[in-house]
Amino acid sequence: MTRLLLSLLIIFIVSCGLTACAGDHGTADISTPNLYQARHNAALGMKALHNGHSDIAVEKLQLASEQAPQDPLVLAAWGYFYEKSGDLDRANSYYAYATVVAGRSGTIRNMYGAFLCRNGYPAESISHFLKAAETPHYNQADYAMANARYCAEQIKRGLGGNDEYAYYTRLVWQQPPISSTANGR
Image (tube, rainbow, N blue to C red; front, side, top):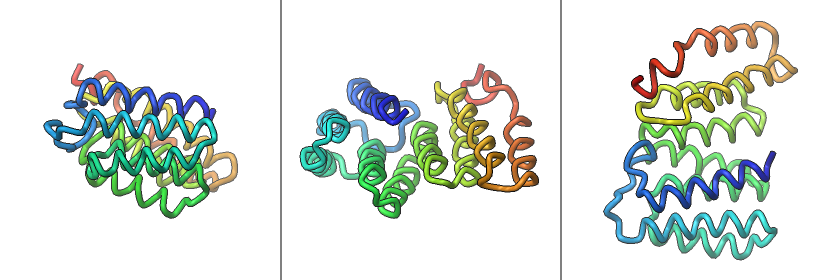
């Protein structure tokens, strides 16, 4: 599962660099001359981390931060790095800051929600997934809702009581169909 998440993050960062992510992916200035290079370096850093080379990952992420210090995808890559390094407080800080910088980015909200759910905060993650799903032009809204349902199940499995599970299940399942909300269809 971790390999899949890392692969998706790498693909996403690289594809965003190629398309400049003008839609959903935050408020980074797409005219920043080094945005493509920053996202490319962030993706290289994630690949190095995946291959067990944390020293190279740090080097690439530092370079990405110099090239685009306020890019939400670079900040989220740092969050993932610190999560995998075991520094959950620092990871949380990077992911949370990425959501602030990104504004209404469904992508960044979904990433932060996944971090929270993976690390034992399923109730907190659900609000981020729901916000992601409600984001206009976010083409992964179905995944955000699936993540919200998964985290509601985590609450049921022992991270919360049945009352809490019932509350979040109602909250998640009462959402209108994705096709009529986030994507404007």
